[in-house]
Length: 91
Image (tube, rainbow, N blue to C red; front, side, top):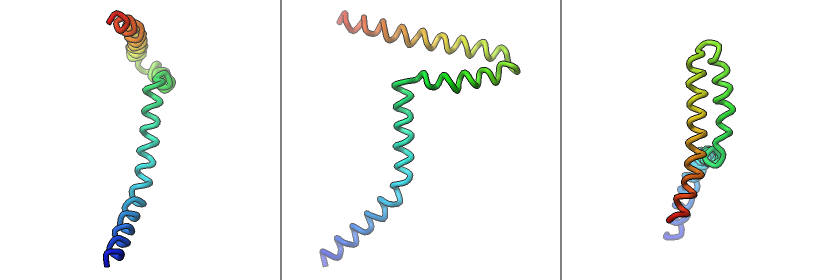
């Protein structure tokens, strides 16, 4: 009786795991992609640049602001990386 009940629970859990396996695979793929963006955010520059070129003919002011925003982002990352290291060295 107890063995039959355990077998039924194992079957139920196996079915639940099988239903979740496919969506969890895509969740893992998304998390891997997000991790790669965090370690190498420069990869996002390619689509941003392509979008900027596509919009530049229609909206030249937007292109200017996007270029300025990219420059500010890069300067901010540089300062954070280098000034952050010096601040940590002082402590």
